[in-house]
Length: 250
Image (cartoon, rainbow, N blue to C red; front, side, top):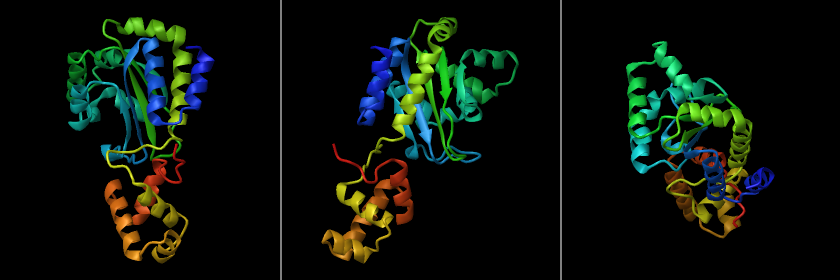
């Protein structure tokens, strides 16, 4: 696809799945056929927050993700550490330099061995600029099987600026799109949270929506349950984080 046309389609993507399809197709054209994109707004000094609260997109195999995310292997992945401490793009040749310098822990070396067993051996990581101390986004670009890191570095020397630009634009676009978890908000739940965000009381919302106060409270409770939070204020904030407030239904 023409480069300008690709950027136009990315910036006009109406949904996350459309954007992700454009990203995976574009990166595969450069030789990167397995991607993991992650973003959190709940970063602390010692944690990235609950994985259920992340924006996580991938076309890696379920088996790989089960070990890497569900079993917490990402916590010891050296390139994850690099992404948390840096911004920009980094060749995975950085790993070999750290191994030769003896700078990786046993847990990090075990994470690398798992990657080798899954043919995740060559690629690049892009760490996006953070807008606050609590946020971090990054993408791991794994090269297709058969490509060495030297092959990847040659690809990057020729096309690296294009690849970074495509991913930066995609990242910025993704931050504007609604993202739903396994239990998305219903239209009613979203509406009552929107009115709370506007400063309305339960009685106000009941009158505006033509419901009883008990029904409004039920929708708020279900919204809290779906978003896995304890208070309505947390629910409003979390729904806003994932662009689920004041959504235009397509």
